[in-house]
Length: 172
Image (tube, rainbow, N blue to C red):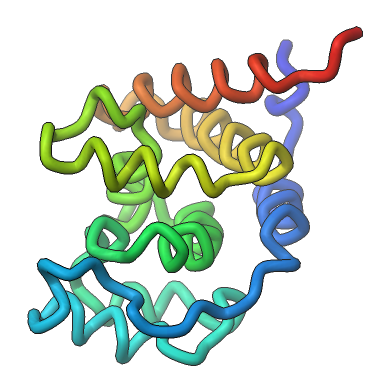
């Protein structure tokens, strides 16, 4: 039995909050150039600009009606606001669109659309080892509780973050 099997939703959320606690609120631009003058870009700015990720609620994210806005964020904004989307996902997976988009944004860059590879690689490269461990814990929790409802993005994300965490592990 993996240690993650005994984690409660609050324990997973705590691990995420601790791993991302020290980040500074990003300034503009929050969205990539292609979406600067778009409804999606405007939605990201309305929801996030000047706000800490801890202040963004599940209701704020649901009000966007576009869980995929994570994909239009700059790498710095993505890393900063990702924990808001992850914590909103913990109790929302079965009945909400948010977790699907979070898992897809965490899938291995090579498994994504060709045009997204560079941006996703840049985003994921900003994640520290501690943050990567919290992401892997989050993904394992999703797998344990909702794996049968997930698509192949969950498997890709688990492989990518599992490899990344093992690759950076301290020698025993």
